[in-house]
Image (cartoon, rainbow, N blue to C red; front, side, top):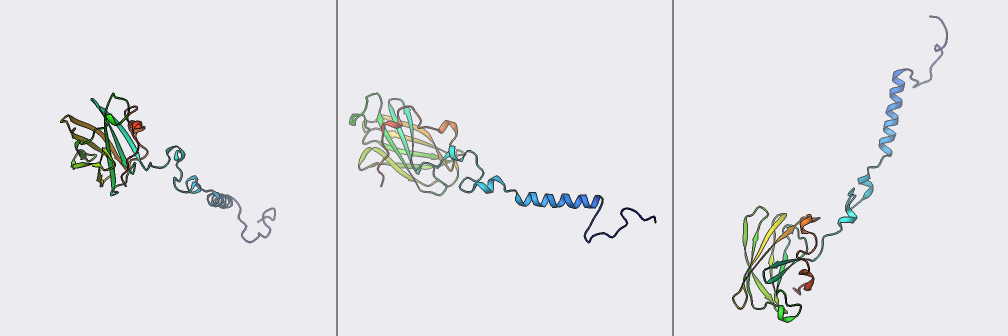
Length: 201
């Protein structure tokens, strides 16, 4: 073989040609993958990688929803605002006569009310008696523990002390957050803002 370029002694570990190019590419890949930090890992709790975390916020401790039904307005108050499955919840309903402004004359006291609860799939869970609160007799409450996530159906039914029929319905979100568009806000305009959160403790 003719002596010439490339015939001299080679350094230990020295590679030439395609193998050398492959080795260099492998080292570059290792460096890139070890230096790159995924955005989700860098963000940290509680909403790792969620770009809308600041907009969503935390679930409310208390949530109100107003319903206008005929001559009466109903305000449903949920504590906690958006419960989790197997979490004891207090459901309070305040009933007032509509169209009389504000004041004691609007309050519906002495009513006989029950609360019908249906699961998100439509299966009836049961009917619960709503008891008048001692410190505010136009507010009626019961306890309920949901067993699954979803939008429950609630229906208040009964009669006033004078025998007039009362009925109103609304959705009860369990482990649904953020809320769907139709459940944002406080329901019927001006109804929920007329009452204060109930004293249940």
